[in-house]
Image (cartoon, rainbow, N blue to C red; front, side):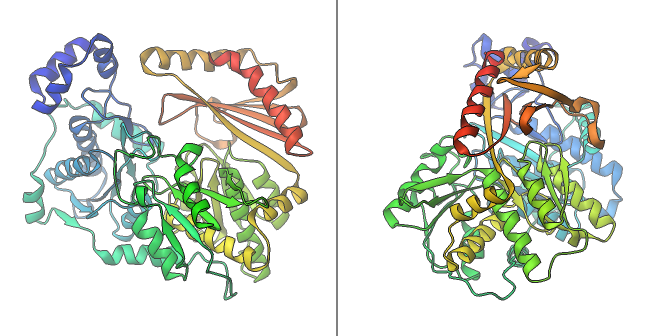
Length: 557
């Protein structure tokens, strides 16, 4: 792409707001904004909000929506063409959702749109509920406030397949961003019945579906625990607090500064519960209120962070792997105790998620399915079971990045369902005098200690993108040992290993059942390194993990 020529074309054709931003750009900013089109993949679009082809703005959103419309019109019969649209609290999410709706309506596709910001899982649910052709969620999930995104779902409520993404990308590629996009005024489309607001009853039905995931089976538990909850100025407030209160958890304090939707995220510039800083205000609330449990969801409410008190009355953060194995063990133990385990049960996890999950699965006689990074691949596995009429075999799916799903009512990770189950699990063990930390130690004693850590290295802009590609090529050639541990085997997932789609991921299997996974992020300009260390205890695991990351660090500078 001739970025300079495209820049001047935008100066001629874009609206005044975009033009005002464009004229403020220096040469470096111009190149970064126009050196490529914002990539559309299986996760849709995600990027920095701003002017340019490599940015999230009304023009890139409209062009993507036109490509999606052309795909839907080519694939679905005329009387079955409809799309569900939802959006989170981010800057311009409401505007982008209306732009997408206007484009689809202009292409004779019925739009069902949520009236207010709601979690991503409600889009998956409504898409299935309304038998829509697909769904769109305007969100950048846990990214910084300067980002937004455009996530696309298939008619099964799962994020689009690689094949569908390829076809939609092809349709988008045929379009001129200014000349080939149709739009109909939003209010006019509402008046003509081409845009419909989603009813409150569907949210109620979604909450009811969440509540069916309980595995208490009539057992009584203490629901008076003091719970601190923060939606991080995102979409979780209404559905999370409603689900908890309807199930009897009424001692809930919401972090006031992070209660209402606000895309500026004033107290938390990087609203990701994986990051300690995002949890700090909630932890302050927990300490002030002497709370038992802290729960934090990200802006689109598909990730959940947790903190609990230890024996010294200090609040300890649990990571995504720890929360996942606690939930999985709880679900399995309860199902087994009450005779509710299905025949040939299935747990699905990503290849970068702790292998301790597989050991727990083996203990309970549950089959483990490993998939590529991205919850869409977990959703696809549920879909395959559904095709066989065996959805009940799926009992849990999780990924290390704080995403969990216990049933097939949606096909993406669900922070509403996860917060509910975490509260139930906490209350169940508390009633029996057991803390979550006690239970975690019990799991480690039974199955062996496993330390899993994630390290990210940021590479911004054109040069950063090229650097990441160079690093991935280098490590595939030059890694014979890592941290003093011999590399026993290299799994290069570009080769479609184990029937998985090709992906730019490499996994190094080391001596002593340790492993390292390296992959470029699909949503941020980062390389991610996942380290898994098996050892006798936390201290020994920490020493080895430190050696491993030090030996890798030179490759990422």
